[in-house]
Length: 243
Image (cartoon, rainbow, N blue to C red; front, side, top):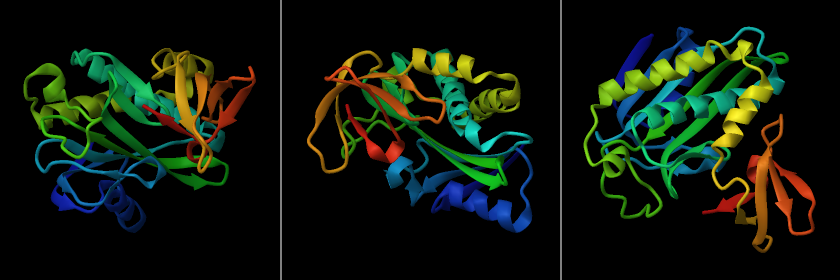
């Protein structure tokens, strides 16, 4: 494990990708920063964080023989690794919100962004970006956000938290070829946010509609039961779940 610590950077994912392409960064290289000025999330969302209070880091992992069609399994294993660590820390009501957010109750505590580099029909490597709210207490412009401090009522050492998360991620990533999709999907769906509950969704410019999350497909699409009793599959940019 090689950890690169920076005071400030635009995006840890972008910085690590530059190391990867220009210098051939080693497996399990981690870039962590106190201040990220241009953090990105799913759908191009901006990840805002208070300097020095949270964990913002990216991890590089190389793979051998991991098919492009296994990208959903990879995403699920990353989310499950973070989920299990948060559970061990005692964070209440932890759930995974499709596609890659982690919730405590109805508030977001962590965001994940996985970017894959391909070689033919395989995922050669991935850069995994994690934004975890740790010691921040004020979310004035983000009313649906929370942190470890707010959940547990005490501060957490960022260095210790980082290394604990890396250990959890490494355990899942290095055994990915040994884990079946069916087992991974089952574990993911068991803790899927709002699964089997009536929820409100919207698709681009269409009016909001009711549906029930039933799970995910092998390709990582969300399965939603609609009011006409049909199940539709939606990709990341096709649908939005309203909290």
